[in-house]
Amino acid sequence: MPSQCHLNLHLNLHKIRQRQLEYFPCGPIEDASATKFIRNMAMKGVIASAFRTLASSGSSASSTTFTSHLHASAGSKKIVGVFYKANEYAELNPNFLGCEERALGIKDWLESQGHKYIVTDDKEGPDCELDKHIPDLHVLISTPFHPAYVTAERIKKAKNLQLLLTAGIGSDHIDLKAAAAAGLTVAEVTGSNVVSVAEDELMRILILVRNFVPGYTQIVNGEWKVAGIAHRAYDLEGKTVGTVGAGRIGKLLLQRLKPFNCHLLYHDRVKIDPELEQQIGAKFEEDLDAMLPKCDVIVINTPLTEKTRGLFDKERIAKCKKGVLIVNNARGAIMDTQAVVDASSSGHIAGYSGDVWNPQPAPKDHPWRYMPNHAMTPHISGTTIDAQLRYAAGVKDMLDRYFKGEDFPAQNYIVKDGKIASQYQ
Image 1 (tube, rainbow, N blue to C red):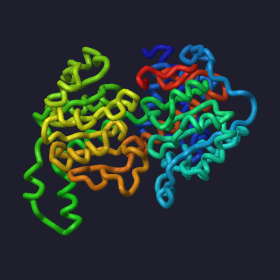
Image 2 (cartoon, one colour):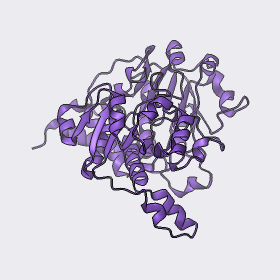
Image 3 (cartoon, rainbow, N blue to C red):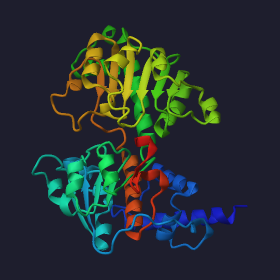
Image 4 (spheres, rainbow, N blue to C red):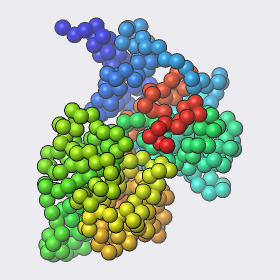
């Protein structure tokens, strides 16, 4: 017999689904992963106040009280969103919400409440569109895939700025110390694209291990030289894979690697829950430099902070096993750019893959574009359609809370009340 709490939960979820037409003019979210994201958030209690907002329910499942710290002053707000331009691709999928043309699907909702929503992809240079709005905007929304770099200089000019939101995960495009000193709130949609990134990492591991890119290139070029691929193609089974960082994405990757019968290692500030660690079969390595020479494959899953910037320099890469494969979907600046090029050219790194660059977008002459044995792409791993649906819903939820003076889900905060979250320090 279901409890009254569970009945209330399902009722609220049903009402939320009914209200998605209001949230997303292109239609309600029918994507299974978006539904799962909302359900998981509900089960964890982090959208209890959203139940009150969206479902107007007085049930016990939605009666949690939140202390208000972030208060939007009364009146119309100016919100600026910076997204990549989709051009001809914008009309190919109605759920393509992460582009400039659809702008998270929240324009009509914001304007119906009297707010002004400016959307642009022009974010750099002295005469860029973003800088025209910096002096009087209240909220700035950006993504890791086309980041608006929020420097101390821009923060100083933004006299009305209160809130910086990442549509996705990450904050390295923001000067967090300057944001904290200015009393700004910085937040992300934690968990919105962790599955997307972990799946992408697994794909890249297999692409490197199996030497896929040269095979694809042969076919495109009308060639057929099996030996040119097979001489450095391997099985993943039995290899040692180590992740530098075992947070939400790192743990998901380890779980997905378990069926491949790899030897799994991880380095992090804290250990994984012992029960989960045993289920996965992963071994904790307290010393990063001791772990590196053991690994056939290294995956970077740590956020970019002052401590991790340039973490993999020439000296640390030299500690890796000769012929190591490296996957980095975290942040490009964690790697020393030239050190990666040199190690790839010498063969010390046998393959490098990732979707993150320093800077982004990567200039045409970025050396990673031309180094040997790479499988690089633009920053795409966390902006699948499924992820876009999740982080669009998360951004709207936080804006709704901001207008009402309610707290965000605790895990979403990067800077709050002048303090930077520990994982970003």
